[in-house]
Each structure stands twice: as C-alpha cells, then as structure tokens.
Length: 159
Image 1 (tube, rainbow, N blue to C red):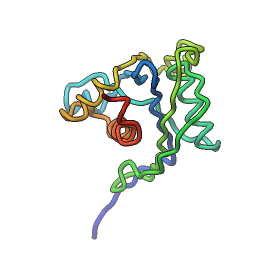
Image 2 (image 1 turned 180 degrees about the horizontal axis):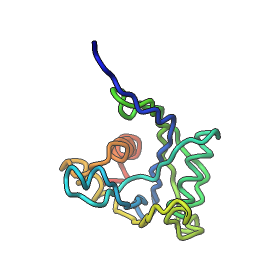
Image 3 (image 1 turned 90 degrees about the vertical axis):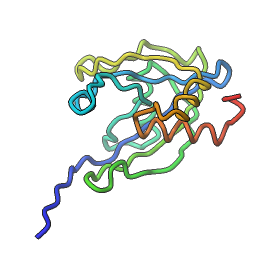
C-alpha cells in the first residue's frame, strides 16, 4: 500500500508588476519559514501573490498588487495557469504580467495589517532580474517563471 498526502491549497494568483519606462519590476520581501528551516534563508524576494478567494483571477491579481505593493494595476496580461506542486498540492496558480508607471503607486503596500505578513516592497532593475535568473539566484519558482516570460515577451526591456 502506498500512502499519499495531499495539501488542499486551492487556487492562487501571482503577478509581476513592471514599469517599462524605468525598466524595473516591483517585488515583495517577506519571511518564509520553510526556507529558513531548510536553508537558513530568512527572506524571499518574490512576485506578489495570493489565494484566489472566490473572485475573478484578474481581480484577485489586482487586489494582491494593491495590498502587497500599493499598485493600482489596470491592464494585466494573463500568461496561463500552472500547477505549483502537482505531486503534493491542489494549488493551481494563474500567472499575470502587469505594467505600471510611477503614478500607479497609490499606497504604501506591505500587506494587510490583520494578516501580519510583514512585507517589504522593493523595485529591482529588470536587467538585474535577468542576471539573477541566469545565475540561478531567483529562488521562488513563480517569480522565475514570470521574469522569464517577461523576457520572452518584451526582450527590449532587458537590453
């Protein structure tokens, strides 16, 4: 007999906000306990993401970008849906790219106080993200996939 455990995580979204004029992306840093336990790494730098709570995935991506980064994203490019860990989890994640400009930063971000996420918002040069991807230094899979997708769709932003 084989015993299998499944985490019923449900659906989620992730969005990579990027400013095509300044050639930066907005990421969030937050504590990730499993990474600390296994690798000693305390903080992960990643694309904003969250659980899809019964609303349209596009609306959810906009909500996460606002809550975590303080961004009001208008246009989103849907990249598709992926299984994040098909061997152990039911989580399917909708991936998006979202362009923004400085005027779209309408709040501080940092997450909702009641969720105690302790999020720090950072902007990173797209060229630096490309170098990190090439060096294997982006440790979050969704962020890696989103950065590489943006590179394929908008290579001129990384020149």
